[in-house]
Image (cartoon, rainbow, N blue to C red; front, side, top):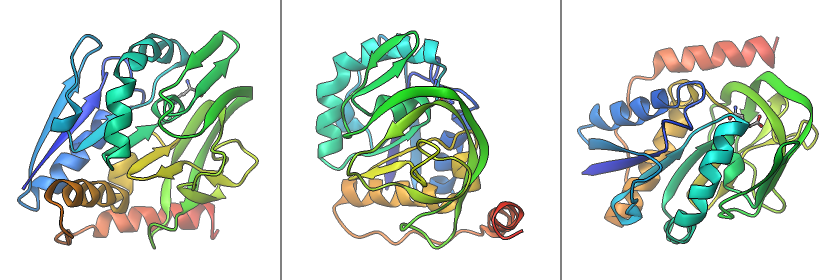
Amino acid sequence: MKITIGHLYPDLLNLYGDRGNIQCLMKRCQWRGIEAETIPFELDDKIDFSKLDIVLLGGGSDREQMIVCEKLQEIQPDFKAYVEDNGVVIAICGGYQLLGKYYKTDQGNMKGLDLVDLYTEQGEGRLIENIVLKSDLFDMPIVGFENHGGRTCINNNKPLGKVLYGKGNDGESGYEGVVYKNVIGTYLHGPLLPKNPQLADWLIKHALEKKYEKEIELTPLDDSQEKEANDYIYHRFVRG
Ligand code: GLN
């Protein structure tokens, strides 16, 4: 079996090291004997979504998002078809905001990909916090760090999780991220996947199941260190 990961615009959307998330996906495949390849795309590259099994859209500053958003309009129809056909996407922070209809800032209004029915507006001050979520998708909590000026409204979509500690989508709703078909959007940046192997495996499993059209049971890996670290953060911020 083989997984091909498309990394969209790593030169621009790579705030807080999204490449580490790619490394994590690759390693977790390879440790199981699943071949893994990553294709980084630059702004002028043509993207053939039919060749991709997971798409990663990373975080970026408002300035970089503004540069990328024009390009996104060109790839929107193909990207939309990929998502509607259950293509797997992980979109982080700036990338998460760009999944939606628009991201409104003091500097202007950025048109988004409109792949998921959500929108983002810049609010007063930034939401910077450690964050812990309880997601319906996993038993283990999701832990991470957030730093965003935008407040995201996900309308009637399913959130990624309930905020146990931290701010989340808008600092008010008590929810964080979004899950739409096989797309996950989240404000948790930096080492999201190394810290949350359950989330990395969710992406790999869904990508393999879509590609090979059968149910896949991933070989368990020794995640004892990751689980210990996750548990430490959970107890530090939630359980005291
Ligand atoms: N520029 C966006 C914001 O501030 C996203 C930042 C990020 O990707 N960390 O809301």
